[in-house]
Amino acid sequence: MRITCPYCGTRSSHEFAYLGDATPTRPSPDTPDVASTFHAYVYERDNPAGPLDELWYHTAGCRRWLKVARDTRTHEILAVAFARKDETSLPEGME
Amino acid sequence: MSRYSFLSLIANALNGQTGWAPAWRDAAPKPDYDVIIVGGGGHGLATAYYLAKEHGIRNVAVLEKGHIGSGNAGRNTTIIRSNYLLPGNEPFYEWSMKLWEGLEQDLNYNAMVSQRGIINLFHSDAQRDAYARRGNAMRLAGADSELLDREQVRALCPFLDFDNSRFPIKGGLMQARAGTARHDAVVWGYARGADRLGVDIVQNCEVTGFIRDGDAVVGVETTRGAIRAKKVGLAVAGSTSRVVKSLGLRLPIESHALQAFVSEGLKPLVPGVITFGMGHFYVSQSDKGGLVFGGDIDGYNSYAQRGNLPVVEDVAEGGMAVMPLIGRLRMLRAWGGLVDMSMDGSPIIDVGPLPGLYLNSAWNYGGFKATPASGWCFAHTIAKGVAHQLNAAFRLDRFRSGHVIDEKGVGAQPNLH
Ligand SMILES: Cc1cc2nc3c(=O)[nH]c(=O)nc-3n(C[C@H](O)[C@H](O)[C@H](O)COP(=O)(O)OP(=O)(O)OC[C@H]3O[C@@H](n4cnc5c(N)ncnc54)[C@H](O)[C@@H]3O)c2cc1C
Ligand SMILES: [Zn+2]
Image (cartoon, rainbow over all chains, first blue to last red; front, side):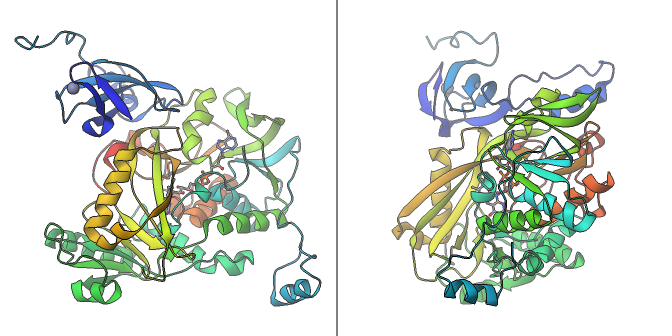
C-alpha cells in the first residue's frame, strides 16, 4: 500500500504510523453526560467496510498528521490531506 | 450417523469404503428456533454443541454465510495454549485447555490435538522476571508452567540463535500442555457433534438484518428468508461490526488483517511452538512438515482478507533474528484473515446489548485456542441469560466501567496490542 503525502509525495505505508478512525472528536469536558460521550470517543467505532477517514502520521517523512480516506475493503486510497485544517500550504521558506 | 470406532473402520475397509455417511446434515432453515447462532466457525459450532449437550436446548440453528469453517477457523495457525496472566482471563483459557484435552473422546472425532509444548523466549532479565510472574499466575489458575534456562532451551531447540548480539536468548517460559490442533477437524468435529444432537447447520445463509419487536431482537433476516428465534447469538469473528450495523450498535472493535505463512516441507525440526520475545514472530511445524509462522496484525482497519508487505518483512526479520536457518527456506503460501480487535485486546462474551441478542466477539488474533471454552461459556450465557464465572470478566460494558482486561498494559487501541 502506498500513500501520497501532500508534502513528500508517494511513499510506502511502511513510513507511516496509524492512529485510526479520524471521525471521533474529543468532547468538551463540560458536555452533559460526559462519561458516555468520552466512552464513545475513546472506545466505540463504526468500523465500516468501505470508505473510512483515518489518521496517519508520516513518521519517516515530514512528520505531519495526514487525513487519509481509504477503502477498508480494497486498501484503495481515495484522498489525502493534512489533518490540520490550517496546514494547507508549505511552511515558510520551503516553497 | 454411526460412531467412529475401530469396528467401523474395519467394516468400511471390507466394503470398499462405501459405507461412510456424511458427517452432518446440510440442513435447510426452519421458520423458527429456540436459538440461532450466526456464524459457522469453531465458536458458533461449539456454542451450538454445548447448548444441546450441556443445556438440552436442541432446537438450534447455526447460520453460516459460506461453508462452515471458511472464516478464521480454517485460516489460523492452530496454536492452543493457556499461558495468560490476569485473573479475568487465565482461568478461562485454562478451562479451554482442559476441554481440548478431552475433546476427541467427547466428540468421537480426531481433532489431532497435539500437546507439543510452547516456549516463549526471553532475552533480558526484566523479561525473565515478567515470564516468571506469568508462570506463577498460570500455576495459581491450575495450569502448568516451567521456567527454562538457556541451556534447557538449547537442548530442545539447538537451531535457535542463542548468541544474537541484539537479542541473546536467556531462556524461556514453557507450557508443556500447549501445542496445536487440526483447525478444520475442530470445525468438522463440533459440526458432527452438534448435528447428532439435533442442531441444524445451515450453510450459504447470510444474515443480512434482524427482526425486531420494539427493542428486542426476535429473529434474523437472511438470504434464505426470515427466521425467528427466541435468542440470537452472534459469533461472526471479524464481521461483528458489519453484522450489528443495522441494529445501530457501535462496538469497541476494529477489524484488522492478520497474516500467516507456511514454508516448504521439512523433516521434523521444531519440537513445539516457539515465540520470539523481542519482536512479533512465532513458529511451529505442521504435520506435513511445513513451518507455520506469523506475526503482528497489519495494524490498520481492513476487511480485505489479505495482508500487506510491511508485515511480511517484519515477520521475516523476526524469524531471521531468532532462527536464521529460516533464510534458506522457500515460503510456499501466505494468507490473511479478518480479526476483530477490541480496544483492550480481550474478548467479549456477554448478554445483550439488546434484549434477545447475545454477543461473542473480539477474539483479536488469538481466538482459536478459545474455541471450546468460548462455545461452552457462550452456551451457558445464552441458556441461563447470565455469564458463567469463567467469562464474567468478558463483559461489553467493561470499557465503560473501567474493568478492562489489558493483558499487555498497552492501552486503548488495537494497533498497540
Ligand atoms: C492468520 C491467522 C492466524 C491465527 N492464529 C491463531 C492461533 O495460532 N491461535 C489462536 O488461538 N488463534 C489464532 N487466530 C485467531 C482465530 O482464528 C480466531 O480468533 C477464531 O477462529 C475466531 O472464531 P471463529 O472460529 O468462530 O471465527 P470464524 O471461523 O471466522 O467464524 C465466523 C463465521 O461467521 C461467518 N459470518 C460472518 N458474517 C456472517 C453473516 N452476516 N451471516 C452468516 N455468517 C456470517 C463467517 O463466514 C465465518 O465462517 C488466527 C487468526 C488468523 C486470521
Ligand atoms: Zn510527508
